[in-house]
Image 1 (cartoon, rainbow, N blue to C red):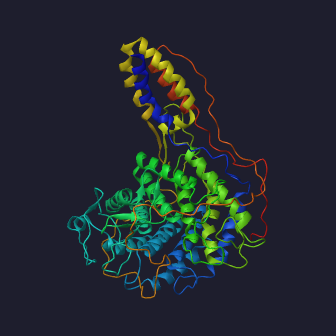
Image 2 (cartoon, helix red, strand yellow; image 1 turned 30 degrees about the horizontal axis):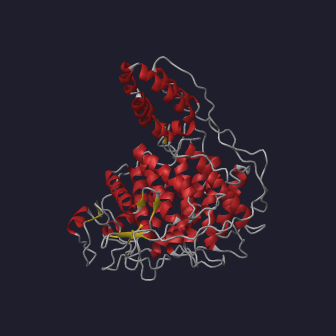
Image 3 (cartoon, rainbow, N blue to C red; image 1 turned 30 degrees about the vertical axis):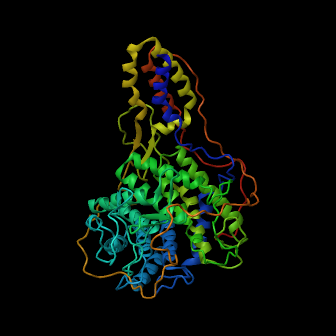
Length: 595
């Protein structure tokens, strides 16, 4: 009886012990920086000063960058102003968008769907930065143009689509194909669907729902997430495959930073706007997998470029410029995570590793020119794809200091106070289970053994123990103190009536830089990726900021309910306090000529 009781109690308490480990790996180097907010802001703006003049304002394009890459460059420019609460790049942003509208005219022919979706996301970032309805209208207009290329539930039921002359399966592996976005717009026999289109559509829908609270967008993001989970997301290993075909139900292709980044951003916004702790935990796990993937990170934490050309002036591998999309997604998720939680601290450390690597190895000496490879060598001339790859990490470094101080979470229930400092970011989540598992596992083991003995002595207390189980399953939730201040207007028309039949894209000359991603793949397994072979020489040593640890003591109680209550209060009491300055005892190298 005693052994059975111990086993049952282990089943009850062991899951938190095996929660995700969000501690910063000891091998990661240079996880902090002492550069001030002003210095970081100047470094970022100096990069954008090198590219804003390079845009052709008649079409919104920088030569040598693809259509989607230009949208991502504009995204980074607008995000910088949003993070810095500035309008330094407002004129450049509006001029570039104006030129892009001249190009994005009458037809979708020849376009691939992920390109216009990148421009729609750029419009969202510009709207968040400048609060101008024109940008929101652009985003919604592009969203409407993409919807005809989506497989509706009715299409899935019949296995046909109005824009395709071939049939497809209604479901694959037991999951409906409804919600998939076709990659090509003008190839009637092409059923290919790629994660970058699906993830971008989901992210756009999530942002539009967050801004407008219109159910149309909620339904869209929900359907897209269901599709991503069923056909692109490898649940055991938490990675995103690149392609899927409803014709043969095959999925596979390379595993890329940008596919993962787009889905992470979409999932984080979706979870936050719906206050769904399950989705939030899923986003945490995806972020963890992305930061610790051996496919694209060295053991020291630095992002590498699988399959990238040796010559840093060669842009034949467009994905090297798109790794900033993973950085952008991680930063977005950081803003929506509980301050000083495990995932928050891990993301901050990871972003600082990339930041210090970019400044140490990717930046040409005494310039504001960067290469896409954060392990070097530096570029000898301006490379727009190098600037694009680095833009989001410079933005993130600014945001890590610019974020307002969080509201401390009380350890006891108190009445709401109107005097608490507002947190202008979105709601933050912190599931209690992972906190207990990651911080108080030792305490749990002691209590588990003590409780087993107590239960063996007194079977009548078993019912009480089961009744108190729910105490460990509660999640700490916190809403923003002022949801309408800052990013979003207090009133936005929920969803304008359908526009006349006016298309946004003139695509006869537009081809996607992605190249010919096949409509379907022949393997259900992701293609093997080259593994990092060598570590770059380490930058000058910085003091490693360690994570706080929990120091607990064991004890005994006469009642298991008291034991569980003590555990709950101990976990709450040991939540790490907010960071005060984030500085180091040893300063990193200074970077001059940043103006």
